[in-house]
Length: 168
Image (cartoon, rainbow, N blue to C red; front, side, top):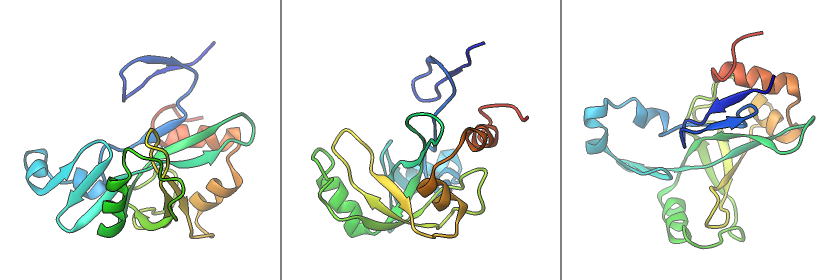
């Protein structure tokens, strides 16, 4: 039996299992009551400002080791105002030649020890792609999965942790 899922972004049914999971906003912004959120934060699908704090939506790729491609975490990353403004300047251009910038993950990634504030490096991409993220805490399991990849067992664990699949 072939599995399928309904995409939370486009609302359409796709064959196979989900290969990504993302957040609409940084956790701290999402926690603001909906009636107050637009008063306290400015945001769209890719950028967010909360007072003097700046966030960009990125993708953290976990390469598959037993199949092609990768599992992508669509995380928000807090960056400096300078780096945020540079990203905005390059938004419709190719930013791949820019040096990576430091940031901190702004979402709690399920199935891992705490990830809020986990240090990362952000690499801008071409205008049609979100920036990529590389965690830099070598001992964190998310960094290990990012560097070494995930096998099908770990992929299944991730799908269960996100609610995409029931338990074993």
